Length: 254
Image (tube, rainbow, N blue to C red; front, side):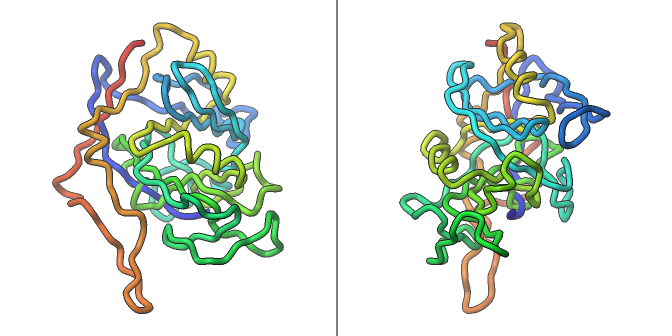
């Protein structure tokens, strides 16, 4: 559930561009071809839509693996599409430190309401919110779309596409992931399965995704909306026209 997050892009080294996994026919939830990524995250997070998995990597090895739920509308980056964007992202902010599991968030702020797992008729954002910013021209709208990794009370749907664009997790899993990532952590969202991604990870010649410090410093810092009476006004910490240019991540060989 939740809506979008957008970011900028990064610097390419030795690569004309990082292309996303191509769509075609296949046997995963989105019926796409299970092709390997063009680059991999050696230290960071990979989300594989083909089998609804999220894996945390350290030095090219999986240290955590979780089931997730991505968009029931498929893949895409258009505003209003409610689809999950592909490509390289970075964590731009985290919200929810110390809050109990099931705490409901609105506009990235705790409301004080705690919802039980699989509560009937309830589908809010709960427990923790990890906001993403897209770093490619194709997914630069992710931050403004409010694309999050977040907890959901609809845990019975985890493992199947059920969200409105965000990446949903069980509350206990998002609490665990929350402590493993920080602002600037790369998050690659691919259409393939985790098995295919892991094979690419094992390839010594495969390029790895790196996000320079200067790009991390330029990530948006807004965490939602501030309340002004009963009205909400979007808080921006950057100038859209001047702060970012596309293709600002770096892809390098290990």
